[in-house]
Length: 224
Ligand SMILES: Cc1cc2nc3c(=O)[nH]c(=O)nc-3n(C[C@H](O)[C@H](O)[C@H](O)COP(=O)(O)O)c2cc1C
Image (cartoon, rainbow, N blue to C red; front, side):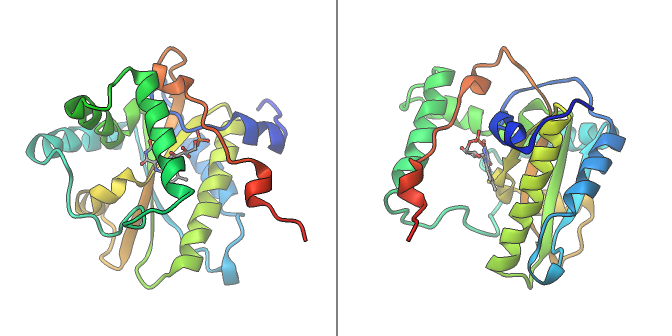
């Protein structure tokens, strides 16, 4: 395994939205996720429950999603709102800017709603990734435990990056809670938080040329 400092992994990681078909071995995914469970969690609850799709299970899931998308292009009733209803500043602008930047990279004009919908549905196909995971937590968990899920996922993304494997975390799966829970066999007490595409970036894909920006450090970090 090539050695990569934590800083290098942080710098290199980005959300990849077009993958090559190159497979990722299940053993590698298992090792990464096992290591990632070293992530901190409040009270050491370790509130995460993960289901991995790879190989045959991914093929089956893809076929299922093709038929679901044909029946219902917008998805099911989401179990949670990904964003607050009236996003205020500065969050609204940040969200708007990343969306506009992505559509500009893809050459999709704002007015082309059908092209936008088609692009959004790439989420529902894991952007062509050969492997993926779904992250669930027990419904009794609240915001502190949901933040623990983020810590696990961030740790996993960096560990994947260390192995040259790319990822995209996907709250878009909140639009398919029933389909996903039924497919993976999650018990009813579990709630789907998100999915994550896992694979190797297609370097030629315009979507992967996007480099997201960040607010200046002084805007969000305050030394007293
Ligand atoms: C929890 C979580 C859910 C996300 N859901 C989606 C998603 O559904 N679809 C998508 O294209 N990107 C999704 N993203 C990626 C963000 O858009 C991305 O992290 C952000 O724009 C910063 O870009 P970067 O990851 O390339 O640094 C998600 C990120 C996180 C942390």
